[in-house]
Length: 211
Image 1 (cartoon, rainbow, N blue to C red):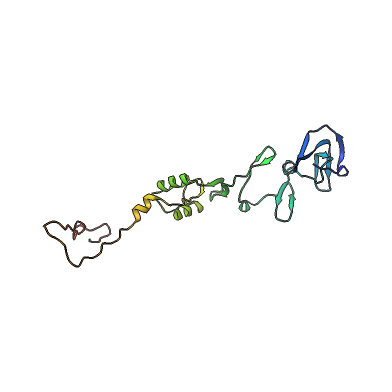
Image 2 (image 1 turned 90 degrees about the vertical axis):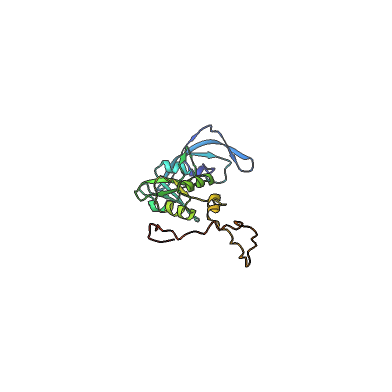
């Protein structure tokens, strides 16, 4: 889309629709033409007299089978036979009509088998569910498994639970030892029971230890 008629070739007058700009401004499409140089050409370029800047549609460039790359300095329109290296892709935005929809919760990875897949960061509920499925494994170990593709069937990129797992906290907590009493305050028989002291146990453990 442009407001400079001198850039267009093979111009045809049309009655196009209205175009809205920022600041409640707008105009109308009154013509269409072609713009080209020695390398690339684009057709169906709309002429809007009120426009002060030229606009280029990335989707129309891609319709010409070109690749479009952006960086902090400029935009590159690559040749049709250019292929993006698989190991350089971090995310992908599928095209929906003329828009590219980017889902920040998903990342593009290539598994060891060579297959590409979209993986996403697990929600808090999904993290808790996988934590239970993996036998209350630590989240550091869980993330190590999925980041290195060491487990099959887990289609998420990472796990995170801010408050941790309550059953894990209860199971790993240690009671504070009782204060040692120098003198027993016993008045009757069986008032003090040592229920946690027993042994030695005659049968040895699997590793051959005696308790």
